[in-house]
Length: 245
Image (tube, rainbow, N blue to C red; front, side, top):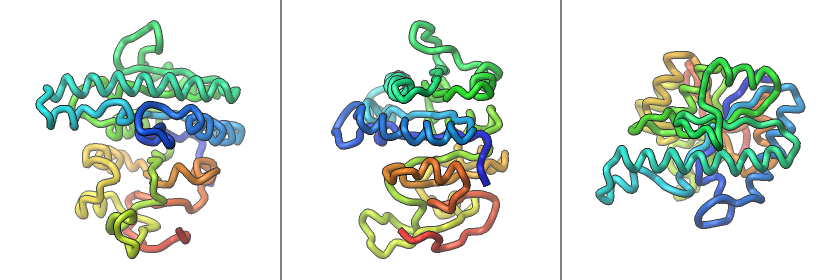
């Protein structure tokens, strides 16, 4: 099954590529090529980007900074990432719009739901930045919120592993990957894929989530066309296994 409209969640860390800080233009180009393939199939693509490659509000709060101030700085970091990604997408020949939850008219459009949907209907990739515009909410929650608002059919959570595991596969070679999970499984077992607010929002609106490995070439295209990649999180019960790692 090919989705008609998707929302892709990219963490700020994903844009690091091989760097320790900032944005890797080569990796942005890698993402842009995959997004172009998806749009050429007629799929409407919205993107939410994080800012953790530049600043993490929660980490700053742990060191004494006011949490709200740290979160606002993090929102500004997502704007920088969104502009960098827009540049890569436009270099790949894709019409792109950046829409911000915080007003900064010189660099991005304000987020207006009906305008965002119109951009998507016209085939433009739309990047949502500045989270929800409110402190104390993660960009995962912003991704779930925007996906529901624009009537996306699926939320694609791009990560550095190929799905959700029963333990950390980076430290436990015997970790088992789930092919499918229920929202309740994710919340009950406290599997740290998305925060609880984001999962609850998806559950309440029956929005499926696919967690997949961004670093594998063509994975965005595969997921967007319904291929069994990564872990599907929905109202169904959990199923272990799935496609080989």
